[in-house]
Length: 180
Image (cartoon, rainbow, N blue to C red; front, side, top):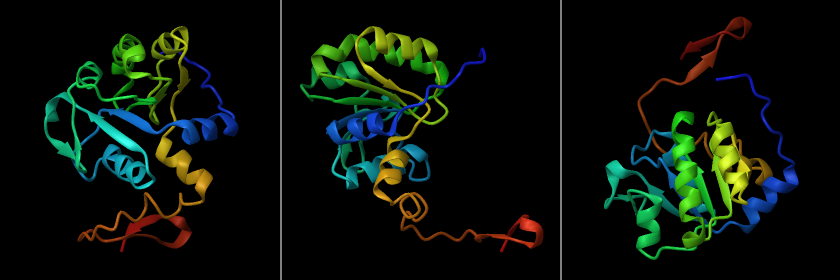
């Protein structure tokens, strides 16, 4: 990938998106409860957003009680909508194809925002979205942004209310990380 300057987004824009969006199609949603997309979906559901998971390998199943669709076309064909935002939770190399699908289904679903998760950076996807009149955000997480603006970032995302048997990580002398 060529060196690119990542766009900076004014807080007012991010807040405006998070306030106006009601329904999010999460492309790349996972049913695995240790995956970032799973707890991002859980957080956003708990904050009142409607989440439509899109994952072809889980189509017809449910994630967190929400029916999974194979594609945005399937979401549109099912009459699910409107979808205010599409959140891409896939590797950057898949973002251009997903952006093309977003543009193709934009009018049927009412999509206004194309959002790419942390680490998802694609100038091609960004250009496709902007050329279609979408607001585009990349390399950001709506869960983190929501938590940042609500003051919850320190709690949600750290404590998933799951008990496991892993030893906690502690800091030793000199700030070195070690297992407790």
